[in-house]
Amino acid sequence: MSPNRICLPLSLFSLLLLLGCLVSSTRGTCNVCNTVNNLTCYSSTQMQACQADVLSTATPTSCPSGYVCVSGSSGVLCQPEGQDASDCQECNKCDESQTFACTGTQSFALCLGTDTVQDSSGTCASGYVCNINDTQICGLPADGVMPTCSYADDTTTTSTSSTTSSTTASPPSTSDASTYCAAVQSQGRYAVGYNAYTTCRQYIYCTLVSGSWVGETYTCPGDLYFDSASQMCVASMPSTCSTTATTTSTTTAAPTTSNPAAYCQAMQSAGYYPVGTDASTTCHQYIYCFLNGGTWNGNAYTCPGSLYYNSASKTCVDTLPSTCSATVASLTLNGVELD
Ligand SMILES: *[C@@H]1O[C@H](CO)[C@@H](O)[C@H](O)[C@H]1NC(C)=O
Ligand SMILES: *[C@@H]1O[C@H](CO)[C@@H](O)[C@H](O)[C@H]1NC(C)=O
Image (cartoon, rainbow, N blue to C red):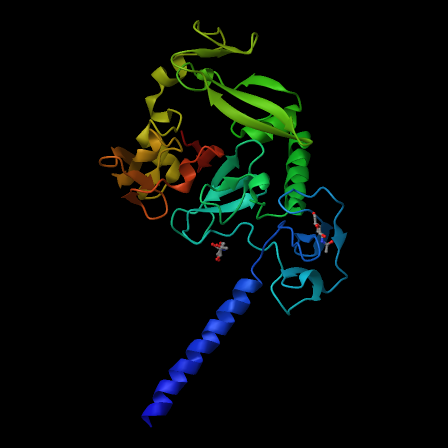
């Protein structure tokens, strides 16, 4: 009786081990070159010729209908659907630590300790790509970090947003630098807004990277303002900037992380939230949002000592969170730009 008892759990255990091995060997490795036959999965149904650690620019080939692209020990193959999980399926999925999800080849969103992608949009620094297993979120293809999302999905998103912007006659919004630059289609620095205290000190820099327009929002150093005419940061306030907007209506002040009440008004949910992506300053801070007599309010805190705020575990930790890396260019949460 007793040998059976031991044997059953043991064989179950080895079966689970075997299953674990099978699962890990068929894990999605989108855009990663399989050197067995120098092919990569370009999407879950397309393959592409490639070279190790170089982003392939070869024209993708589609698998026959009913077949999916799978990268395995015998190379990249088109396999009948339903056999092994295809590659390129980890886009828009939260990573194991529930910190972030890649939402495009160069973009990501926060998960805030859940399995759900939050209303958040982050961009990788120019040339960097988002990878679900990268401890810094965005990495360089030259270092072997390939985008988790397929370029096929990026194309869909870009064409949708350009259709939207061409149908609306209003000027492109400056709230998302890359969307703005995609609409402007011209290299240079552009003014962000008219608020003397906030947006007047910022500018968007648009540049063409491998055929697509990318943008990043920058803040002028110190007390300087951005001047559109000279495209430089200057000491004198441009005439287009207004100091009245914030002084007259404190209740509708722009939701920024330095304004916890407005920030929490944008979050619309009680709890702890991150402040920024700067490893030396805002990464140590967090905001607690709460409802007070029907109004959202918030308090800003700083982690003790040299600890960092981790947006997934919602605690102060001693390891630098992945959101605090220099490879991350910008990040917003519920429309609020994190510093
Ligand atoms: C794959 O490419 C490498 C160099 O990039 C080459 O040495 C190797 O022979 C190629 N393998 C196949 C199967 O073509
Ligand atoms: C990559 O991340 C996914 C999801 O978080 C995880 O399941 C997988 O084990 C990771 N792969 C590696 C090689 O770490």
